[in-house]
Amino acid sequence: MNKSIVTTTLTIAAWGMICLIGYATLTKVQFIYLVYGKIKPFLFGVDIGTWAHLEHAIAFLALGSLFALAYPRHTLMVCLIVIGSAIVFEFLQTLTPDRHGTLFDASEKIVAGCAGIAVVRLVQFVRSTRKEA
Image (cartoon, rainbow, N blue to C red; front, side, top):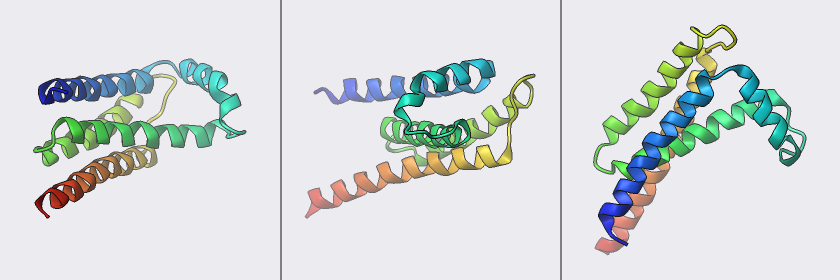
């Protein structure tokens, strides 16, 4: 497959993911309860509080991974986007009437996003050392 097409697709996916997370973060809380109600049968009895933490981690792990893949030579920029978006989204939640932003939520999003970046960078490093050998 053409490298340019893959890069473009990853870039669109990364920015689309940040938009999706932003929408889910800032939408009315009833939307979150509706989604949870629909997927609850597949969650093996996980309560909504635990699900929210898992959702934060999975979303930002994917976000960090997508941005790291889309911008392989710009690790600092990727870190700033992922960390900055976690902080900005949590801050914006404090401005909505039915949501609340917390330092703990921002921290778990930052850790998960950085873990996604680190995993991609590690895989890229291992692949590059294997090509050299």
